[in-house]
Length: 235
Image (cartoon, rainbow, N blue to C red; front, side, top):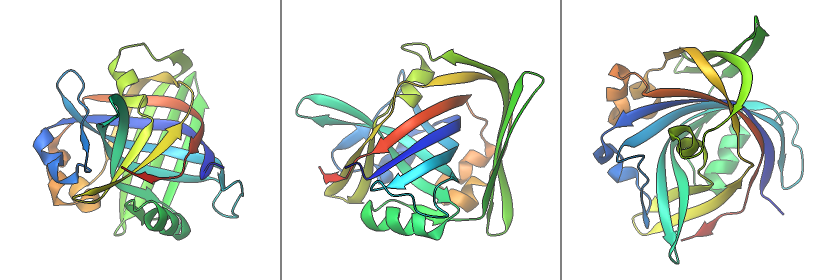
């Protein structure tokens, strides 16, 4: 049985070009950075969980909720087959039980904060917004997009960002957990405008404080889909 099933919907993905040396200390054992045309990206991602089930069971108050995370991209050579995955710096959710389960079972880096979201569709435009408070300071990730879904082009940067199907967690210098995330190929909306009010140093630590002075290299809005998260294993 899958550990978790859910829908991930309205994924805002803000991609930042950074120096790959920043990520060396966060790189899990046996993985290496997955670069796009030689460039290293981290992504600020906000989305909505819907119809969430853990081990096939819907847990009251933990079915529909927001998540915002900061992640980067890696690959792992598994018997001469490359697996492309993500590593999370920190994941924000609004329910403490979610943080407890993810941190205890998957050794992830979840943190509980007050969160909200808003989806508006008017004048053929889609407005998607995720807000949260960190140490009482409000943070915001918002886009305005066309309301028309389009296919993600093959061999594009958007495909690179969205087509990572494994999660890797650094346990220590000699141990990594791996888990599989499955979903169909996503479609996306054309982003017309965005607003990002995030104190990266406050939320993600001093290593990422420099991002307060950066503008995203690209902004995406994916519709999302049903997803499954498989049980973890050690690599």
